[in-house]
Image (cartoon, rainbow, N blue to C red; front, side, top):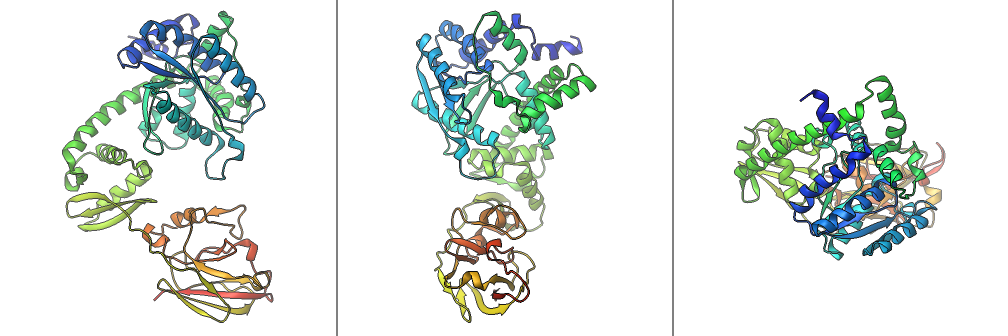
Length: 479
C-alpha cells in the first residue's frame, strides 16, 4: 500500500463515495454495536442535515429507531427559524422530536468560553435525551474538518497523545451526575465540502450558521485562517495527513489503554493501588493506570496530565505516609505500600463574628485585631503565611458591620489592581492552599462582599484613597 492510500481513505473529498462510507460505518457501529434506538443530533446546518438524510434509510434497513434531537442555544436571531426547519424535517419523516432551549448569553459568569459552555450544555441535553428516550447512542455530524481543527487546537494547548487522537468514531462519556452518553460520528472521515456537494446534488436544503464566520472564536480562526495558511505554505494535503495522524494516534492509544487496563487489574488491591509495583511500570503506563483509576471512581477532575504528574512526583518521596491534594475534593494518600483516595474532612462550622475598631477577636485558632489608622499599611508574604495585615477605607466602612467568617459557595472578590472579579475558591486553589485549610481560614467581609482574603489583595471597592486618608488596619495572626 502506498503511503498516501491510507490518508485518502481517512479523508474523503468525493461526494460519490459518501453513502458507501456511511453504510460501512452503520454496519460496524449500528448492527454490530447492538444499537436499536438512536438519537440523531440535528442543528439544521449542512453537516447535521447530511447526517440525517444519510442515516435515515440505513436505520430503516437495520431496524434502528431514530429520534431527532435539537438544542436551541439561544445565541442567534436565526435560531427560531432553524428550530422550525428541524421540526418540519422530523414531521415530514414521521419521527419523534425532542427539543430544548437554553440562553447561553445570560449564563452565570465562569471561566468557560462560550464554545465550551455550549459544549457542556449539549452534553447535558444529550444526557437527558439518553434517559428520556431510552437511547442506546446519539449520532452527531462531526466530520473530518472538525477532526483536523480539534487536533491542531489540542496540539496548541499541549495535549498528550490521547488528546491528539482527536474525536473518535464512537465515544463513551460520563457527564456530571455520573450519567453516561455514547456518541457515534458516522461522518468523521468525510470532508465538509463533500457533504455540501452531496446535499446540493440531491437538492436538499440546510441552514448556514453565520457565527461560524466569526474568527474571534478559536475554532473558526483555525478553520478560516490557520488551516488555509498551512495548505498554501506547508502541505496542500495537510487535512488528509492530519486525519491519518489522528487515526494512528487512536490506534496507539487503544493499545496502550488496553495494556494499562490489564495492569490496573493486577495493581489494584480493593480500591487502592500497590504503589511499589506501579512505580516499576514504564512512565507511560503509570500515567494511564492512574488516569483509568481516577475515571473508575468518577474523579475526572484529578485525571489531567498536571494532576497525575504532580502525584507521580509525590509518589517518588521516600516517606511511607502522606496525603496529597489533587483537586477540590480529591486527596490521595499513601500508607506504606498502598495508594488510596480519601475523603476530605467535613469543614468545621465556625461562627460569624462582628469585628469593630479597637477590638481583638479570637476565631478558629486565629487572632484578629482592628484599629483605626491613617494611610496604607500592608504586610504579607502570601496566602496562608501569618502574621498578615491590610488597610481598608474607614470612611466607606463607616456605619457598616464588618464580619469575620468562613468562605461560602460563590464568594467572589474584586481585587485591587485587577479588572473584574475572581472566585475566592480559585484564588485559594491558585495559592495551593490545602483543601482542609480553605474552610477554616478567616475572610473579612461586609454586606456579603469579601473585602479581604488574608495574604491576598483587598477589594478595590474599599481601597484607601491616599497616605493621609483614614483607614482601618486589620491584622491576622496564628499562634
